[in-house]
Image (tube, rainbow, N blue to C red; front, side, top):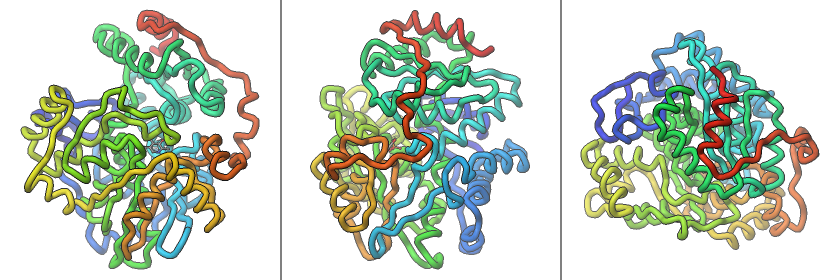
Length: 469
Ligand SMILES: *Cc1c(COP(=O)(O)O)cnc(C)c1O
């Protein structure tokens, strides 16, 4: 399988060439040249596979530059009951007739980002060893992504992580989760500023190409193709659990921010998985809902980006969205470049009209938005009707799923456990959420982190003294 850029770059790299990269050289995102098509016989055969076997089958359609036995080993090490809590890895829970929750949040950091990041850790370690290389991962986080990256990369040979977070601004639970890691290859840097300051430092360090090359700096952001590919697997796993035969169709409702999760659903559907609709659920940061309702994509400024009680969906633009628009436009790279490289950069967005807009429905996408009041009401109603406590992000998904349900089964993706977002659970239910046993008392574990001023030079200096090489 070869990969192309949504903006038309002439190179056609293979999987391992893009594994350690972010954007394509022309600023586009990588996608496979074609989506492998899954016929009925194959789908029937996959129905009985374990999660790891299914992941191997799907990944091997997209990865032809890792020997089969090695890829199988990587996948088997990643998707285990020890790491993800159950043998099903992403078990389905029935809430009501035809309404299911698919648990993607039983990994080490209790959020769905573990599903992809755990695989990425093992793929990185493998590929770096093969190339005799080191990688120093530099990132900024306000919560979920940073901890998922650290738990995936801890103790991995050839990898050192430098994770910037705003000092004193994460929840005590999130701080404890990240700062309690004692692994010597994990460096938590608490910046005396806000999240935007952390991101600016990452940008400034990455823009120093000489420094970046010298210290082999890389990232693990949500546009990485391997992360998206890992997420395709659980759409198949969810489908098989909700249906008895391949004649049935299901819909998925996906709490969305950067459009990574639901874009994996789009890829699964393009491969032929019988998905009726992909329901994009946003919170008050509704840039995606606006697009799917009107065809207009309008990036928000930071003053128009709301801080909500489903914080992992608080985005101003959706970094994976370009992938879908490329497919929507019949894979026209020139038009995709005009929209994202020019209109978004110059005017902050674009509006699709006529035939372009009419094509959206053919890809199965519909959308809706939810508010803080909706989340609280949904958490309460779900608990009262089924005894299940859901987190605020999953509540956004449930709320929008309820608005848009049709006869076919609906699977709502559970993207985090309620234990991570205690304040909203207390508001909705008047009590603290349960915590997985392993995390009881985590706030008391000694913390390892370094406080630093808002200074790219200070961070560079720290990296130069602590980098793996
Ligand atoms: C990251 C995240 C999301 C949003 O997923 P995208 O892939 O960015 O659309 C939703 N819920 C939780 C809990 C997350 O951590």
